[in-house]
Amino acid sequence: MSSSHGHHAYHLVDMSPWPLTGSVSAMMLTTGLVKWFHQFNMDLLLLSFLATILTMIQWWRDVTREGTYQGLHTQVVMKGLRWGMILFIVSEVLFFFSFFWAFFHSSLSPTIEIGMCWPPVGIQPFNPFQIPLLNTTILLSSGATVTWAHHAITSSNHSEAIQSLALTIFLGLYFSALQAFEYAEASFTIADSVYGSTFFVATGFHGLHVIIGTSFLAVCFYRLYKCHFSSDHHFGFEAAAWYWHFVDVVWLFLYIFIYWWGG
Amino acid sequence: MAALIIRSLSQTTRRGVQVTSVRFANKMMADPLEHATGLEKQELMAKAAGNDNPFDMRVYKRISGDQTNPTVVPSFYEKRLVGCICEEDATCINWMWLEKGDKKRCECGYWFQLADAKPMV
Image (cartoon, rainbow over all chains, first blue to last red):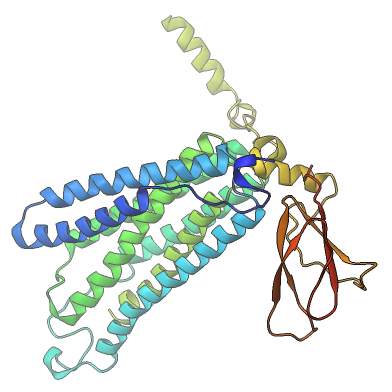
């Protein structure tokens, strides 16, 4: 029995600076964005990116050390991690719920200011059967490949897990690239009526979540490559897969309601 | 050197995709018990040895619990905080400190005694 941790299964965490540096970086990130938008100066934003990335790397490294190298993640600790991730994803669902609320509020009974029609007068939306449909197939395929990776891990097949997870990350990057091209080509901006506002806030936050999910999967790829996972213990990967499926489902709603029905 | 590269390339390309080494290079992951360490490994080993409650996480069923036959509670320390659910449908737990040596009676009448806990494995 490990004497420093008592006769119990719980993981009493050590003092860590990362919650503090993470909070400061997140505050700097939002402030840096505002500074960039208003003064066209990216200094604070780039500094906050650096602080955020340094926090992420070191926090993830610490959790990996505790879980993989110190064996502190017992069954009951993993149960806690599972509930933590579930509650986090529920909070993310509510976050996106508010953007859909704004969209339906504006689109179901369009006001006289926007011509009493949806899309508003003068707005030329994207054709939902071009890039957005391709993006739908890309994200659905990535959902399949991440499940393939999970099956490979549970059957201890390292090579196949590496291949399928690499494919998933590639599909995530491909999606982000296509969305970037789509944004560059858009005929309307975030300032073009409530259509532009709801469209870019909802799809923009979704794009941000795709980037976060891709980073999470990339961390799992590194850990898989370093043999941190076993067929029974790979919660980091499972959390990333849950998150990825969540991002996938949000896209389906965005595609059906904002791109297709609303366009 | 160039000849060597051409020869190895032509040998590889002549083989069908089903017989190339890439297809059969499935590297397997470590056994979960071998992969684990520390407390996680001790828990897995205890479970493998038949101990399905290695951290003493379950609620103890009170036995008859009179003075001659108290409910025995294991502890690694000199005293342990014990909670008694005095009645089946009680809405609160009655907590008390149980110390090694003396038997102790809960206000509901049941008796308890602290015993030395055995190491997990």
